[in-house]
Amino acid sequence: MTITINDMMSKTLQTIQEAASVQEAANKMKEKDVSSLVVVDNQNKPQGIITERDIVRKACINDTSTSAVTLRDIMSSPVITIDSAESASKAVDMMLQHNVRHLLVVDKPKDSKPIGVITPLDIRSEEYTDDALRDSIEELSSYYR
Image (cartoon, rainbow, N blue to C red; front, side):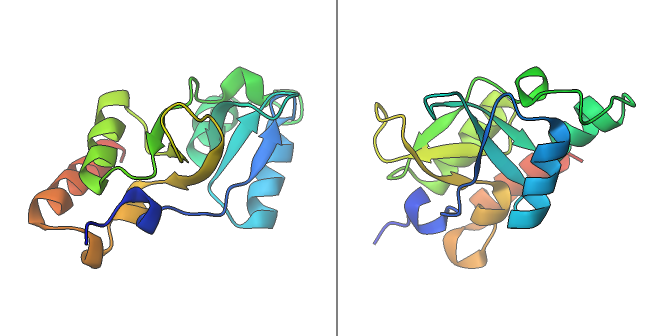
């Protein structure tokens, strides 16, 4: 049996409106114990992703008031998606290609409804990876230090 993204992804998917402030996002991340939120528009369509790293690098480090900056201003966009039936190696390739650590998981490539998020930490588990894939994950991890 081939292990797919669906087997590894985090199915806890939290969203937040793009007009919300960075402070609201940080509070929600803490409350929900997640490191990223899917940023949605008024129709709940994904517009981007906001991560702890985005908050630190795009708001805090610039000494910006976190209550005055909206997520629309600092979110990572466009959203990079991956089909839930894809492999871990495909996810790592996409992360490296697009210079991201979070991929939004969808059921079908043309379906924009997200069902989860996949990160290098989700893929890192020994049961999912072979030596070559672990090497790629290490490369991805070291790239973002």
